[in-house]
Image 1 (tube, rainbow, N blue to C red):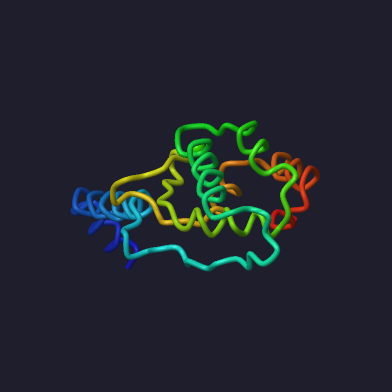
Image 2 (cartoon, protein in one colour; image 1 turned 135 degrees about the horizontal axis):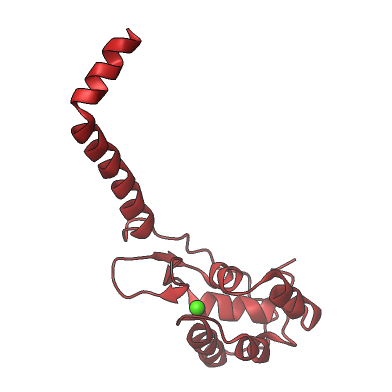
Length: 146
Ligand SMILES: [Ca+2]
């Protein structure tokens, strides 16, 4: 039996190797590309009591997006937006941000079919380290990162 398997493998090592390579390649491609059908969940946070107007929320969410969308992260810019805010204030920014496509592989925004639409919390958690998030918690009354 074992002898037979060894003989079959010996005779067919090329197609077996190709088969394994195809499976590896496919799982790699699948991990790399998440198609637009795999959307994040668009949940709104409760804004009641927010001190931030809709247009301010838009400006703040744009600033956060610009601070995160390229390779690396502009932590200082994120701090300058979020420090001093409350949960309700943050909710206004979160809701204004909506879903933006994020490519985990490079920590960057994505215009094409690569990446997955993610909300602001996902973006911030991906872009910032635990100590960055703790810093925001300590310098604001935002509880989303606790
Ligand atoms: Ca980034």
